[in-house]
Amino acid sequence: MSKLFSQFSIGELTLANRIVIAPMCQYSASNGNATDWHTIHLGHLALSGAGLLILEATAVSDVGRISYADLGLWSDQNEESLSKVLASVRRYSNMPIGIQLSHAGRKASTEIPWKGKHSISVEQGGWETVAPSPVPFSPSDAPPKELTQNDMDAIIAEFAEAARRANRVGIDSIEVHAAHGYLLHQFLSPLSNKRQDMYGGSLENRMQFPLEVFAAIRNTFPANKPVGVRISATDWVDGGWTLEDSIVFSLALRELGCAYIHVSSGGLSPLQSIVSGRGYQVGFAEQIKRVIEGTDSNQMAVIAVGLITDAEQAESILADDKADLVAIARGMLYDPRWPWHAAAKLGASVNAPPQYWRCQPAELKELFKTDEPGV
Image 1: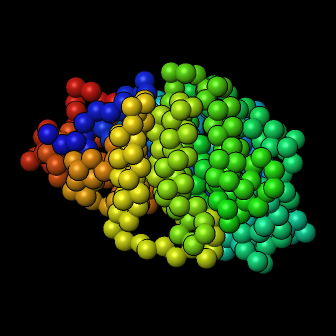
Image 2: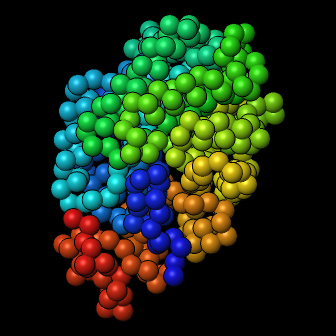
Image 3: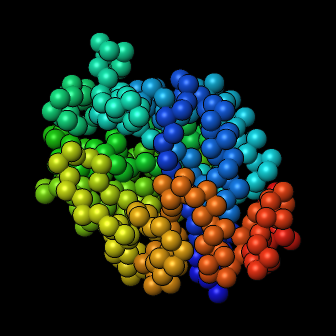
């Protein structure tokens, strides 16, 4: 029996298998509003047979966007447009759908990737960025505005309000974005957090604001729906955020009711020196999982991500207990039927819409769960 295609529960949310479609920014929204692109993009991913689909980084405010084309959930218009997209997708798929709530902090106000991804100044039509400290991401960037206590309280309220909106549109789970150099990661790392108050200095202090954001979301989102966190396990820079810090942070999140940790890395500094390769981040997930399993408190799931490209690799990660779930991102864009093909290789079956049942090869007659079509 394939472990990759076994059921798994994150809190009270049961997944058909352990394949997660990781958040992937599309830079195709209009003033934060979802567009026809999102209907097409999410629609075909929702027919892939994966266990969980997590929407892209979704800004909780207009100034929290990475770019002017980011998806958002701060206004009634944002909520209405996303609701329409999800209604279309769910007409043909019952795959659970999560959303990643985010604030870009000092990495906001940038051009979209295929137009250069450079910072856009206020004079060029961008907006003033904010951060825990007035330390720019790149020396060529304008220094961000240092957040005051009132500013931070407002951002916490924005995350909570976005969680309320997510629940109203029927989102099944929330992932808090504390990775890749965005605002919550900026508070965590000593490279970007130079504050002298209760939110800076020690590891405990630097974790405080991200923990407050998580708590606000967890207290707002229905208790029967899971809330997880994506982290960067390391900055890949000497003197920065480390795996050991990530373990402490993960344990603190678990005490607040965190349902899972999604373990990525990097993104905080242009000085990062990433040692990339096949499954290069899986070891971080494994070490966090070992610590979590070695404690007596409530368990939380661990998701591994990062150059996980084929079925046998994904299966071995789970079989060797290195993670509870595996997340696929770019590989899913390249092959939107990745779960189908993985199931075929591993002798498993997968949910598929009845409109596609006739496409399975003759030698794979058991590939589709025709008694559980997922529609």
